[in-house]
Length: 523
Picture 1: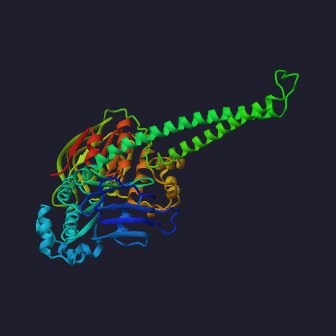
Picture 2 (picture 1 turned 180 degrees about the horizontal axis):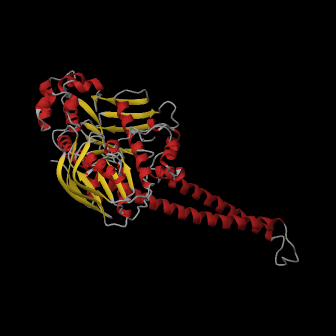
């Protein structure tokens, strides 16, 4: 993969040269002769399609895999997230920090905890009792507590609610000297001053945040398409001219050899040399055209290699005969044995054509509400569909409603795509076509889903939902681990087809663009 760089990298202190890496048994290289330079003071965002090697690159910088080429740096690297095993959940965060960063004093971590606006008491609680947001912030505080390190941060906002995301964004915006892998456009815009992009064929570095890079990319792609069209037209003209000249030269060559005095009474033997000279000139012109064609083809080659071709996804939502599909009034939800409900007196409706987004902190009951709606729609026993979940108030789901549901959990995906299609009753050819439109490579089709990345697993669930005609689409955190290009592709799908939806999604920009109503949940 050849590299190309932009922006000021003259003072770069981290140099990646001719990096080549492939996984054993993999058909293609993840990186091939990749070269780029970055500075250790940058706030660098790393973006690329799912499966392009973002996490792999971080692991290579941590020297966890063998590779060809060089990665040279004048500083140490450290990596987020730290490994947390099951028995670590019983240990206090302070103890774990001592394992993650043995060289730092606890006061250095407390300084970062204060900057994170967290209660220091969280360090002295079992790690398993902390929320996902608290765990992330404790890890980041530990990560930034040492000096002279360049920090590699891999998707810190996955599974975090809006409040926790804002805390991480505020904290990182005041830091520097890191490489951040994220698909959250709002986060990348807020905290980054440079972008490192793993394109389809090349690697590039640009100054600015995501929006700056995307604006430049759209202009660059438009120019590349325009140049490509110009070259295609010019090649067509040259081929036509070469064909005309070639046919004239061939005809003249045949006439030069001999002639019929009856049919060609205006010719004489002396004209042969004239026709020969003319033929030679035409043949030279054909060769000139061919050289120009080769030159045009060479200049055209590679113009479209990095263009993101986001295919327009399709959806066939069913139209329900009633206006109101879900009606919630004075609803409270709690689990059996819990001291208090997750929320009370909740009121909202899902009307035909509306896209309702649920907003609230982790643990506020968003996924539980979805389970309650699915249970009401199925009419099955509560202990089968949502064990221990007790609903009080009114939750009315229209009878005969067809629902397409995306679970935020992907752990149940196993086996081959062909078996998944058969079990779900999906048309295999259409399902695989949708996955290709979501940029899942054909090489993945022969793998077991357990070996997919989290983003690729999410695309399996999204493709299955898109292939299921439904009155109501319920998506619970569908975009976790999904690359930014696919997010924009799915945004366009929703805006074009306007399905009736209930969704939980913490990507602020996605939610603001797609939702027609936001319902706040929580006490």
